[in-house]
Image 1 (cartoon, helix red, strand yellow):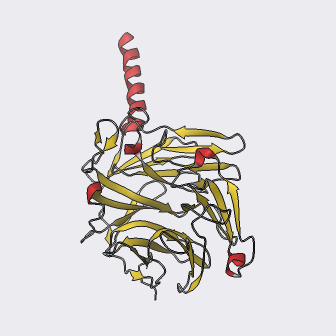
Image 2 (spheres, one colour):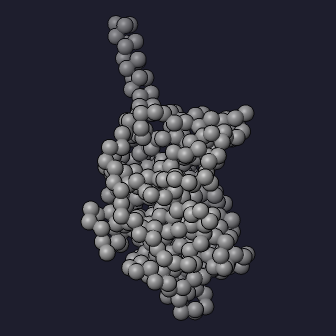
Image 3 (cartoon, one colour):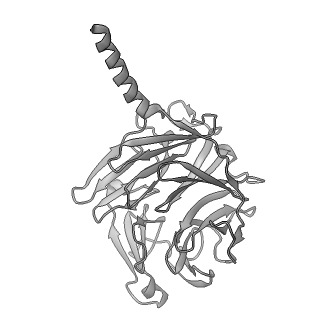
Length: 346
């Protein structure tokens, strides 16, 4: 009887550990070379982020006269620009696009991590140069620093922070309360408050409330359900990639950068992968990137092999295409796009 009881304990403990540590190895065996088009726009010199709307493609440009540049989403004709660097209510410092379930309301929703403010841009007013086109609202302190912030509901935010207390957080603005989803045990344990080796990028399915996290220094992806319970772990490739921490407080320059960015649609998850050493970050000769596609069960579908070294991208649901930025030899950026269907559109 004692032996049976002991066996039950071992089985229970083993299954608990397996849930958090088991992983599925994915071999990328469906490689696609997309037909890529360059967006010819002289204003797009240092594009950092891209936002897509029903009639507009919007680019956050760093180091230029204006912060945001707007183009017609069908043919990329120039529509206008707005925003300057400053400390006023209509100024910007370091904005990001706020991800929402519905972006088709004539408003560009941003959040500025340096200004600690939400910024809402009324497109009609800004293009017609009307007053009060940009509205500013104070941003909760606990959200500052998130590179991937999603507004799940009127009062609930889901996001992450590169040196956060967990993989991602859920913030309730009504209660001013934040809850962190702990790092999976397969990752390195934090050394004190040094957690940047576990930096990641996340995307949210607004219908199922599932979250996918893709790691910056590991070739790992994690799938969480609507209760923030880990459902699945995927490793890209046979060889395990993980970061080296030096003296407990900084990362080795030999670490491999894996995930650079992530985005999604209601049907698929798109992950921008690099696999380049961090110290070689600016050496882009002959470098390329790839976009790995999964469904929302983290089942591998395909890989788009890009002919460029990309730092960021977005899925355009209105035209079923990918837009991405790429470093150029002059130190600036070019912007490209490709369609996702099998027959290239003209």
